[in-house]
Length: 154
Image (tube, rainbow, N blue to C red; front, top):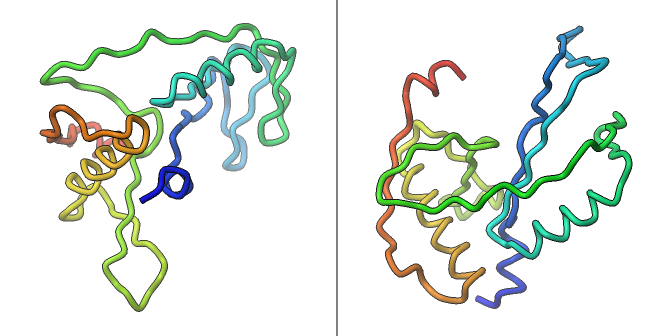
């Protein structure tokens, strides 16, 4: 599989929901008048993050979904160093798809409760590693469990 074709299939970034300091919910919409808002963008491609940070830092405001935000500061968060066992919270929902039904070209989005979800996430991460670094990971053992209490609250 050629890298350019593969890059079309995988998003190499993700972003968080807006994290409001002060907000209210009005008719199923979030409203705010003041306070700080945090927004995280993440990617394994450092060059992408650097360009986003540099360009955003030059702006006075950012328009998102029709709302204008004043930019106070742009920061690069320190890179995480992985260990053999870690806990983390995803900044956006983890989604993976499968297409086992050849008659239906639409992908099936796996829920975290479905058999094969963890394996699909693992395979997805390994494929992305191969696309970015053009080599398989040195160690492809990866397993994870979900904090059921956290999932239940969502």
